[in-house]
Length: 133
Image 1 (cartoon, rainbow, N blue to C red):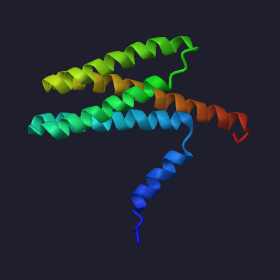
Image 2 (image 1 turned 135 degrees about the horizontal axis):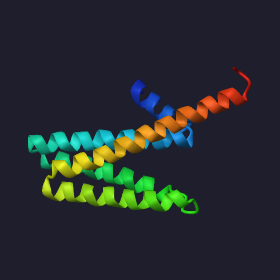
Image 3 (image 1 turned 180 degrees about the vertical axis):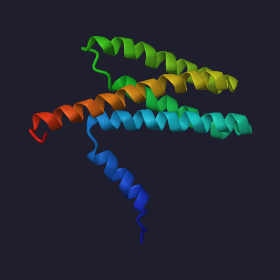
Image 4 (image 1 turned 90 degrees about the horizontal axis):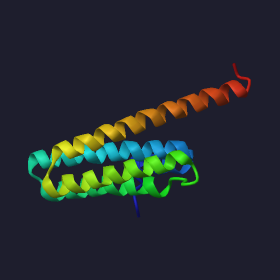
């Protein structure tokens, strides 16, 4: 008999009910989480933990890359930036380079903040259009 973990159930439900924009925001937040854990592992000398967390951040960057709509002009620029971030993550993993991780962290934070603002503006626009103002 399996015991359900309420947190895992909540997490799974959040992913299943999220809009595409919210899923992208979750990816950015997850990437930041794993970068932070990777930095802490480097500082603590925990090589396996560092590798695991940086690989998770790389996997998220890969997911962001494959979800780009390349018919949209800005996607080509984003692809270049995501590719750069991925290369810096690889470098940070190989060389235990915290500065490279911090550089990627800064880029992901900017993307996340911009994306979050876009979601909020879209919600406000939908709210106004629905006549609820």
